[in-house]
Image (cartoon, rainbow, N blue to C red; front, top):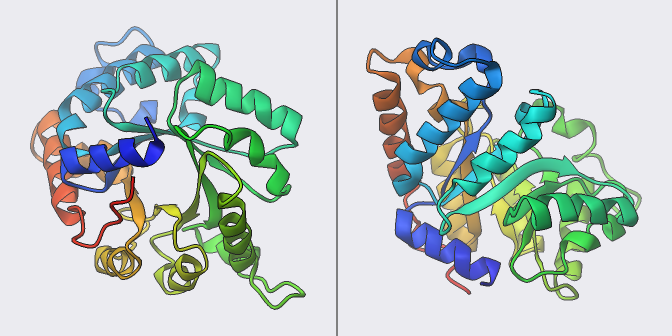
Length: 282
């Protein structure tokens, strides 16, 4: 199945462009989970599996931040595989790995995340050059979300700096991805922070057919209204990730942890209902 087709199906089934980020921190898990687990790995596994069970009707994608699994040690890689395998097949899976290395090394990352773990998409850094992206863009069933303008405050240190050609680094990346998209089978896209919507308007004009992953809603205070306007204005193939705002919802709720997570997911599902002008191309 073409990545565009799977994405469109997942958005239609959930009715939303919500992407749930699984960034599990053992110290912040609900006490009911931690108290009955034999280890941190077991606690994270129980938590993630339950979250998927509770939230799968309401999300178009799950984004697994690999750092949180790698931090668990050797068992973390096996856990990452187990969690990915338990995500319903119709939902898009994104490895938030932010890899980026020379092509022969990139091919090994591609084998790990696409061939062995079976993710549909991956986040990548482009700063070592366009050639580092090519191993990930050989398969029409897969997509890459490439760091173009991130949501953190430090993004201005590099991404907003102007090059000799007059473009910002972000603009230059967007242009290169736009040109690259016509020469590859896979689906290149951009990571553009939800906190950067004013600059994002220009980037989406430079690469109008891009898939876009827009983190920064929730804990980073990105504007839902600005994100929706941007998506509709450009008819973007967009997903909006929310992590802590959902998986840590129990910390600010008097409900049970399961009720808190379901309630938060439903709220974000409604906040990011499929926009009327969401891109429908398959």
